[in-house]
Image (cartoon, rainbow, N blue to C red):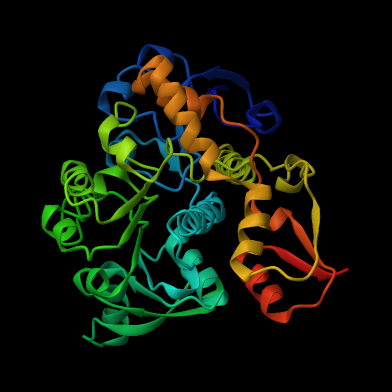
Length: 402
């Protein structure tokens, strides 16, 4: 079996070599010619698997994407061709939530407000949004949610037509959140976090979900964070609002037309990063392992590699906190010990100036430095502070008393 794997997929040899010959190519270099003689294809989000690509895929029997999103895959076409497909739902969701929390705390520090005083609206309560809602609730932060497809499905199942309700959201059903319409969420929240898939058609289309009208309706002082899909926001309208009134703030990890993104929009954002919110090593390895398991099932072979064997020991395993910290200062300190989004913001700026935005954007992703997740770090408290301990644990850290 010949297995073609995106060069940015970690541990591909460790997982797939026992199943066949592993060939690596950069994601944007995977084309129809590269698929000649290939039996299995493993990609990430930048490779479009469509009719043009599959023209060279006479032997292809399996496609896997090591990502949560699947809008780069023509799944209907794969089904027509009888090609098995697998994705990796939830693989990098924890990393994206890490990104959201530390980015918001970074902006709060920069602008002089407290996250605890804000109401956060989460659009999309799936793998990422649900986990974000759970952590926000565990941290005691007020939040609302918007997810019409979920509410519609649950209303049908329960026989209720009520659309605005309090539902259990998040991993394990730990976080109560009031589900409201998008326009209600925009009117009532100080921070909007977008975590929706890209759906171009139908009753719940998300393309330009935040259109010019809704962007104009954002209350001055609102923070918009998009770590879902770039096409869910009208980039031109957002750029006009930021450049004109300049009374809202944006944190953007995704953009329309990646990698040839709107440079002016990136410069207007408080934090602009090259689609790396989920780029933790832990998340990438989870994605690789999920696709490895799917391919093993498809070919009828046992899975011999475990995720635990793939994950290395984190370079920073523990920190000890003394007393006297303001809660959000302590949060910023420990979060940035694991991951600081300012590094990626600055890296994108340097790379785009030196290489142009297209090459710079891709270079930042291809050469991404080691990054772990919050739950790999244990926080020891030298002075017992139950409120801070609960806040740290809610944010995703392991907390002990030293």
